View (cartoon, rainbow, N blue to C red):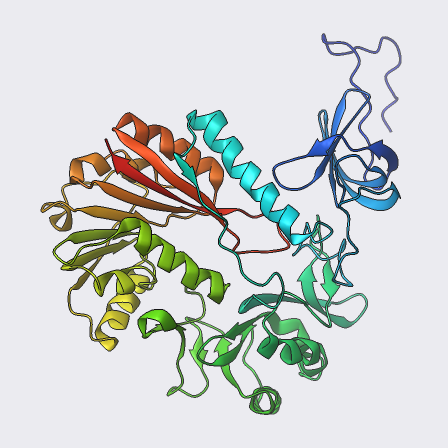
Length: 450
């Protein structure tokens, strides 16, 4: 055995390094203000603490979830002095489930927080404020979510199947018997799902479960090994009892057990039916989605003789309502299967003035055939990364009006810098409350050429 080296102990040139705070440590803190993600911020001994479940002005006991450098992430374990704004969390799983992070805030305060987040990003990053702020688009704060992914994991040591949602700040699974944000048709499925899955013969081969509620209710099971006939019978009986379609995802793409079944959702104000398959992107909040589409059309003010461009078009959520109002819609999406699905949705709704194209929208717009004639107006709904390369070329398309739907205020603000540089003015902006009880912010902005 090698002998331990004794003698001089060297320290880094910067001096001694502060001891790291161990995970699990409890600390009493005074919360100074809220961060943009809704967590409380406290300062102690040169460190900045981000505390989930805490409000400005409160004195709390926080448990450390992780620490790196001068930043400590923690969650509230106990409130010694509560803010006047604090309300009892409506969900029994609050603080453990990672799905809803700000339900201790009244809904109007959640909206105010999101409004401040958007305004701060536009001011700090882009140095602009819209000529007009519009009221938030909002709907019911509970019972809104029409799609959910349920985590499923076999615990080999305990020999039990864990079913629920991911815990806050970890990969643990919190058993959920009721979820207040799910739409009502999914509630009984959610409550009975664990018991049904535990009856299957190979629980260790189960992946996750997805629940859908649209023009039909559906249950999708991800499985890593073939299902036995007995297991399939259990699944089919469960779905039949709940009036739900059964979809299976083994090798390849998800497939319905009954090949004649299809999923979809309606855009009622426009008498449109859009088909989708598990894995496709759809907005989870049906009511706010319809309000969002209506506001986008109002702001874009499409005219009957115009040619309009829809970027990141997905299934046609914006493109199909637009097509009812203009001469032509050109819709572009990066995922080829979504392009095909959107084109099928247009045809099934008897809309023949739409054209759909696949293109990598993380790259600069090239001289694509679909861009050569130019456009009167543009609508774009990019992912969280934003659309920087796309907006760099928008002025060259001749569009006088641009509606930008964003799921990340930071990248919206970054892209606003580029749009202003090209001569666009930020006319209107407002938040879309797509995910109540969370700090997630969606927004819409209208730009007009100077």
